[in-house]
Amino acid sequence: MFTGSRSRTPVILSLGLSQTLAWGSTYYLPAVLAAPMARDLGLSDSSIFAAFSAALVISALMGPAVGRSIERRGGRDLLAISSLVCAAGLMLLGSAGGPLQLWGAWLVIGIGMALGLYEPAFATLTRLYGRDARSSITGITLIAGFASTLCWPLSAWLEADMDWRNACYTWAAAHLLLGLPLNRLGIPSTDRVVAQPEKTRVAGKESDAGMAMVLLASAFSIVWFISTGMAAHLPRLLQESGLSPAAAIAAAGLVGPAQVAARLCEAALQRYCHPLLSARLATLAHPAGAFGVIAMGAPAANVFSFLHGFGNGILTIAKGTLPLAIFGARDYGLRLGLLMAPARFAQALSPLAFAFLIERFADGALFLSCALGLLAFAMLSLLNHLTTRNPV
Image (cartoon, rainbow, N blue to C red; front, side, top):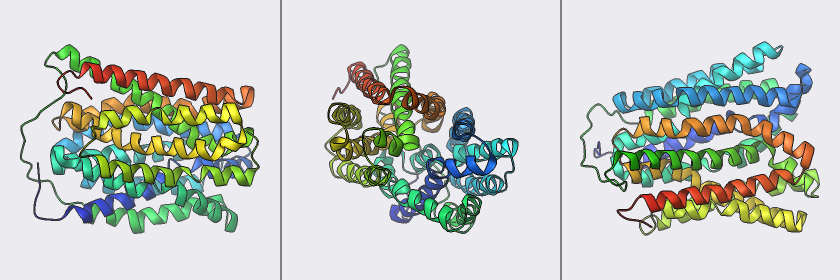
C-alpha cells in the first residue's frame, strides 16, 4: 500500500483530533443535551433518543457504500465532506422548532456519522498503509478515546452558559474551523496504491470466510449494543446503584481515561498479542464490572466504569484491526461496512432498550449487559477456533 516518505504522525494527529470532535459532537451529544432539548421542545427524552437511533440507522445503511468508495478513491474527500455535513446537521438541530425539524436534523447528522466516524477513518488508514495500519488505527483511537471525557463536560458547560441551541451552533462552528481543515489538509492523497500479497487467518473454504463474517458481525453487534447503551445511560444507571448524581457523573467520567489506558496497553503489546486474543479478553471486562455492581452496589461503581471503559477501549481498536488481521487489506472498506451495519442497527435499538430496562427493572439492564458480554466472548472464541491457520 501507499507508504510514501511522509511521516504517519501528522496523519494520526489530524485524524485523532478530528475523530475526537466528530464523536463528541454527534454520538456523545444526546447523553448531555437530550434532557434540555426535550424540555424546550415539549417532547419526552425517549423522543430525542428515537431521533438519535434513526441517525444510527442511516449510518448503518450507508456504511458499506462509504467503505467501497474509500477503497476506490481514498478517504480524504469523504472525511472532509463529513465535517460539512455534521456542521449542517448541528445547525439544523440548533434551529429545530419541533419534532419534524428535530428528526430531519438527526438524519443529516446520521449521514455525517456514516461519512466521518471510525469506520471511514480506519478504511482510509488501511488504504494508505495496508496491513501495517494497525498501529495507526491504535493511534487515532488513543487520541479520540478522550472524546467523552472532554466533550461531555464541554457540552454541559456550553448548555449551562448559553443554552442547548448555542451549544449545537458552537459544535457546528468547530467542524468548520477545526474538523474540515484537519480532514482535508492532514490526510495525504492516495492516488497511487500498490497492492500487497495478502495473508489471511481464515481457512481456504468460502464457507469458513462466511461463517467468520457472521461470527464477527454478531460479536460486534453485541459489543456496540452494550457500548451505546452505556454511553447514553451510564450516569443514570450508576445512580440506580445508589450513587448521587454528582458521584455518578464522576464515576462515569472514568470511562474515557480507562479507554485511553487500554489503548496504551494495546499499543505496547500489539507486537506480541494478536487482536483476536485482546478482543476476547476485552469482552470479559464489562461483565466482570457489571457483576460487581449487581453484587455490591455503589461501592463497585468506580471499578465497573473503569472496567467497562478499558474493555471498550480495546474493542474499539479491534473493530478496525480484527477484520484486517483475519481477512487482510483487500476489500477492507466494504468488509468493514458490512460487518458494522448490523452493529449500527443494534446501536439504534440500544438507547431505547436500556431506557426501558432501567425504568422497569433497574438492575435488569446490568444482568442483560453482563449476559451479552459473555455471549460476545463465546462468539469470538468460536471465531478463534474457526481461524485454524494460527489460532490464538
